[in-house]
Image (tube, rainbow, N blue to C red; front, side, top):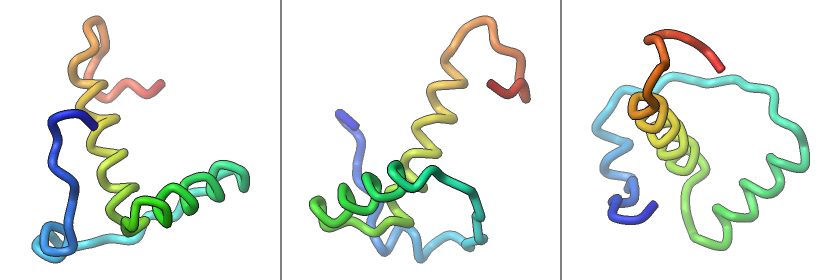
Length: 70
């Protein structure tokens, strides 16, 4: 997360929200929750930021077709 601004409550409040239901391994869920507690962050902000970073990384990867999963 070098050089990126953290998502704040104001940022999240500006955009309409939807629910995301995903099945996550229990050990990973615990690690994410603990990380958010240590950093004093909202879980919602953590997940939003992680999804944005993942999509940005996929966009930069050469040789990938748009819409391809994996």
